[in-house]
Length: 111
Length: 112
Image 1 (spheres, chains in turn blue, brown):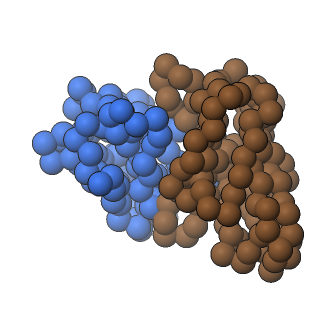
Image 2 (spheres, rainbow over the protein chains, first blue to last red; image 1 turned 60 degrees about the vertical axis):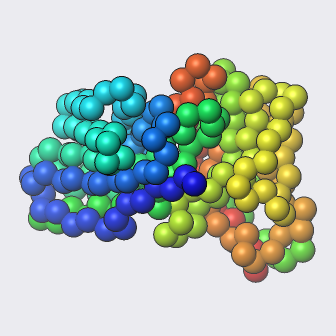
């Protein structure tokens, strides 16, 4: 079956790097996504990675994909208080016209 | 202006009432989706539509219905609301070529 798992909470100090991890079960997934949800807001697409890539970097964000282990991570460099939010991992299984979301990881950034 | 809008943003209603949530988009996307979000459960797909004549059930469609009135509009109805439908509801859209989804700001629904 399809399942996406994330740890529910991560706390980091301002200026440190944050690493949010995600595991998924469908090896046929074509795209994997990271979304950010700030309080009272909808989900904002942060970045995505195609399944034939193993890394994607976009400014402070680095996405790593290990297809063998079905593991996706999001690294945020120099984490700021404005990065405090819930981060959702999502997969798009091959042949499916929908996304499967994890439960979200709440990132708390403290001084 | 926001590309995906939802109305209302907040709604409190009573058990048994009929409720309609509206979604509009200006992105020109073919595909539209309705999700609900509950704490600790992430997002679960209720219904989705790939064009005006296409309606598909998601994983939790019981108790809900939808209408795709036009390419830009997709509404979600609760025919007889019940308290366990209290949740945050999100509309999303995607283009058929990329399937990357873009979300509205959400509607917070409380059923008493």
